[in-house]
Length: 214
Image (cartoon, rainbow, N blue to C red; front, side, top):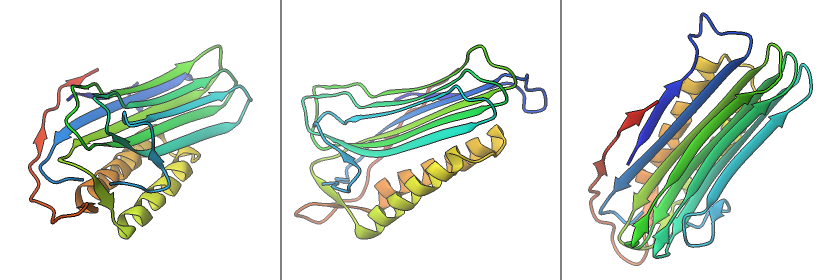
């Protein structure tokens, strides 16, 4: 498991072309089987891909996009991918990309390599601000699980709020804090609003290892 912390200029001394990136990847192993089948569930058996690409080339325009995904993995090789990429090439513009992904691994794969990345680029722009935020939560379970109705409802609310925030004019430090709150809510949905299919859910056993790098 690994996590990468925020790297950005000091909020009181941001240069005209401010770039903010955040990457966060968490790997959890639990005894509770967490079959998830909401509309946004990713297919393919390997965890799915959640890729959010935003390019802004229009002066004085704010462009934002958020992708919130819940994937599942049943394949021998689990390679879920989560990417937020934002690029600005304009004047007095703002560009934001947000990618948040939770992945449920139903089996015990031979290989599990979650990929999570955020990339923010200012290219030939003046007074532009660019932010990329990527968060990934991977859970290994004992078998299929299902998300409750309440969990699906909360996930839809998280999706709507993430989209609203991506298109807001909040200062980047405040926007990051709001997105961190949404990530915590998404993790809670996975931890608390899942039910094992076909039998009583067992008590959770969670193992977490973080290795922050910048």
